[in-house]
Length: 394
Image 1 (cartoon, rainbow, N blue to C red):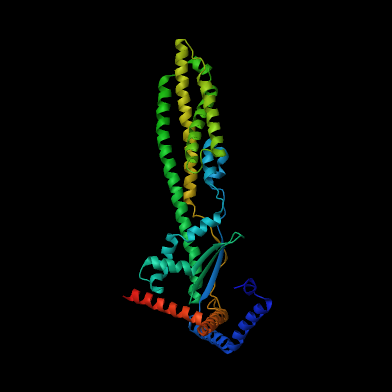
Image 2 (cartoon, one colour):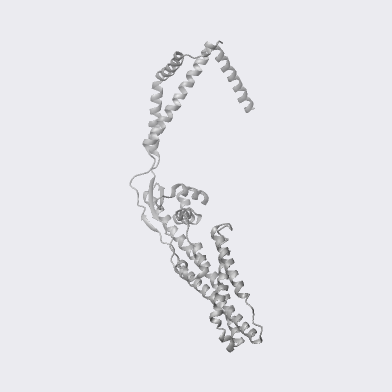
């Protein structure tokens, strides 16, 4: 073969394209008729598919409001950081979408409407997957959460969509009460333990006696600040322990809290390093002041835990977050699927493409059969294929 034979001229390319067009023209009836027949068949089958109706409901997720703990944040001192750190989420909508898809909500819906029987499923897991396909939950950029429920019965589709919101409300109420109960029990224990220590400190203070020199030292003004500082250090340590649960030690807020704790400890060390009195009366005064300081320390802690305990009780009495429904689902009048026209068009185009490939392949095989070399290759290919099929069968 020479170089001139290897070069394909524009005329040859044009002839090849014309040959393809000629093949299409020769089989035009098959291509058009077969495609239309496939489209009409798909259209007829679509009429046999039961219509599906889609009902939609949208609601506004509960806003991140300040809880009772945050409302008294300014009066709680260092313990107020516990309430501030626990409040606020970056994207509340994603949390409520996850709750709607949770097993608690899905199991409640399955039991409420007996979906295992309705969907003809033997296992609950299969009914859950079917429910996930029929009920779609998505959060929009506008902050609203939309629930689209599909069913052959338009009224049940609307009922299923609205039931998602109802079950979410029940779950939120249960979670809110459970969280408040946990906080109440925690602070109740802390309050009880602190109260016992406060009673003991008060009894110890009373048994120490009061002298004139001690009264002159004015422990209320000299020691009360130190006791409050000690209580603030204890509260800051509790805050740091809580922050370790949701912040890394390299976080700015965590480092800032550590710095504040170090500063308070340094101040406490300076106050405690004062020279103690050397006389006997001075030692008695110092002993009384130390006991009075312990008493004020437990008294301050008792006040802090009391406020937190009362806040937890108020939160426990709440009914939970309120869901504001924007659009309640109603029974749709028009079906959402099957879309008969779309099905017919897709089937027609798919059949046209398949028939076009069939025509080209058939024409290529017919042309190869007329070529001796190509016919020999086809014969060898058929022989190899039969051997391969025969060996597999054996």
